[in-house]
Image (tube, rainbow, N blue to C red):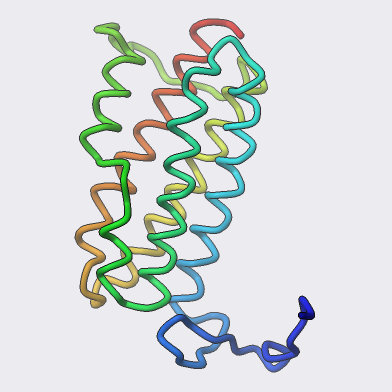
Length: 169
């Protein structure tokens, strides 16, 4: 099997629904943003695994797998893909609470205390881009189900960045 099909040479691509759409369509834009987010999360997960905060890497890995299901939903419109999203918004909320441990954020956060916190912030901004792309699909059934999840993921990435920077490693 060849990696190239030449099917997209004229600016269109296929969806899981079997449609041929322009590469600048909202569906392709959303899937591209989700793909970028997944790549950024891969950097975060790899860095976490090699840091004192390695216990957080499996959660990021689960979210990455869930993003494939979200992307499949976006590309197909089939709600069944969302059934396989295993990381709930509530699980991410618990993780955020664990990261903050009752501490209060009382100042603006500037990325760059550590390389890892910067990567977490890069993933957070990619997550916000994916969220905006999903909002553009608001006419697609199921998007309302995904929006709280992706919003909570952004919150989790912020909390993780803050925690890593606060810990100084």
